[in-house]
Length: 296
Length: 280
Image 1 (cartoon, each protein chain N blue to C red):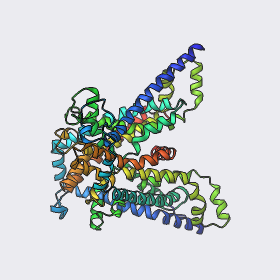
Image 2 (cartoon, rainbow over the protein chains, first blue to last red):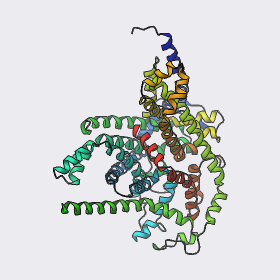
Image 3 (cartoon, each protein chain N blue to C red):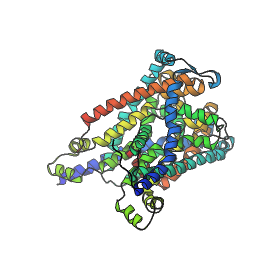
Image 4 (cartoon, chains in turn red, purple):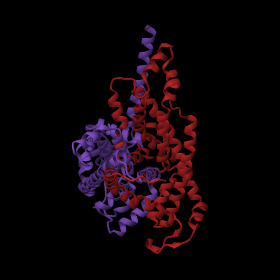
């Protein structure tokens, strides 16, 4: 590469540039880039007592993580959670967004209500839902007249957790959809109206394709978000809950090993597995984007 | 034409019914939380679906009891300090870096910005163990610094502000430099004030996510007097697990400040979180 000589003004500008990015770059290196390599290194180490004295053990952690059925179960649990949260969270939010985009009266009140869970600590939200799900005294069983063990029956506990996830995220997805909808030119709908297309046909032939970049963006961020879920499982499932095994996510398992059991090496390995998994998912989604998303 | 009008009216009614139904589902947990908090435990566990309101007086003292036993004043203070410093750090570092990436030319810029993007793509859990070890080695466990630590800088905020600065017209700086402003002055006096809305978005976004954070406060605080609202709630479920009014009172106290602020500044909140989220 040929290096051009910089003029004084350019040099001055570069100096300012470097100065302005220094705090951020220094922070990123210390807080994020060093940790990436450190986590990778720790995943190759056996953690000594009290987290001291790491000894290099090569891939032995990976061996024990990958041969532990608990790991695979937690991966399956995480995927199952994502399979509830993402599709339902996206479809319900899309429907609500389309309604709220129709300039009805009271739109802003509805929007305020739907968005409310977004500003609430998941810890508190999960506590409330745990109380609603209470088998003996919970509102849900009392209202439905049932005796369902919402969070202790391993067959349905993952659905119950998924419902909390959907409830929590609808408002956020909805707001993103609304801003996507507002970018669709109004003439398309007017033309369709003249052609006599019904609301539902307009939805599938205009809204869905033209909104696909927004939809893809939401799906992509929500998939990553759902695959790193932790708070809901941690708050709702007691450690003595028999269904925990069938619900705990991979990040839950990571937290448990790294910070409850003090096995940082094993925890680091779990998070490396998560990283690889998320990279694969991201690649698949990038491929899907080319196929399903309509950019004009 | 008459047909179309009735069809529109029917559609409208259907939409309102669905919207209202969903609004009720969204609100029921909050309503039940507050109502339970006002009952005695006896009332809370009485098995009757129509027993909605507290019958034997509204027990506001439940709030006082958890307020004292969990020292909510300290929890509010700790959470507020964490949020405050994270917002200040995020806005300060991101606006500078965003300006440099968006407006200035310097060698290594593309490489550095690639690092910013990489940080955004990696799941945050990968940073946690080393970050914890650093805080622990610095002897900063159970301090506000420890709580703020991962939020000292923000890759996402840098990206957000960079887009904000790029959207400003070119001639602004030229006019300023003709007037004899150096780059620092251009930044401080002209450019930074113009990205106020991006900065507010980033501030709200940072505040809300700091407020919601659970894992990091649990890791770096071990004492009740140094922890945050979320982490304190996590401890509470273990101890108070059968005193439902107490738990619901605690949950109410934990969400209340943010909900009140949200209701007052809802437009900024929705826009702040959505525009930030939408640019991720």
